[in-house]
Length: 210
Image (cartoon, rainbow, N blue to C red; front, side):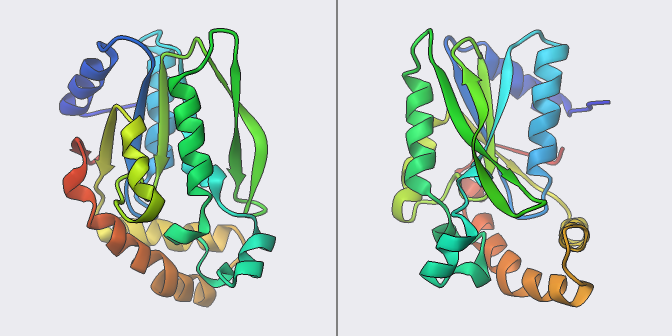
């Protein structure tokens, strides 16, 4: 069952009242629950509000493992410079100017193999609301600064740090790391990224704890 706070529902309805296609961004540190919130919102809008809504994950723009190894960045996968930022911005721009008969295809990210899958998501012109989520939607460094230009709103997802770290540990173990390796990855990669993301919180349009 989807449950959202009164403030979140009010904010959502305000967004949906705007004309044309809307793109809502959800940002937060690793383990905050961004994808869960995004999927819940998609389901709620489609089923309860009869608003055609689709999901676009920023994680689909992870660079492939082979490319990360070539660049020498595989040991910090998930950092800002391990994504195809230009590609992500390009698809947001395409969605803003989508023709009525056009399907825009986007990549998804499959955690079982830790790789992006090209063309896995078809985004339709009739879709009224796109919900995209990721770590760096509000960053102002390098090319990331262009992302927010194409979003109608960005919500920052707050969560208790203990809960977030527990989720991260569980996720890493679920997808093949030992507990020791998972804890080392969290310390060396996830938490430095979380600090960068927290620094962008004040630029969010709305903060939620869903």
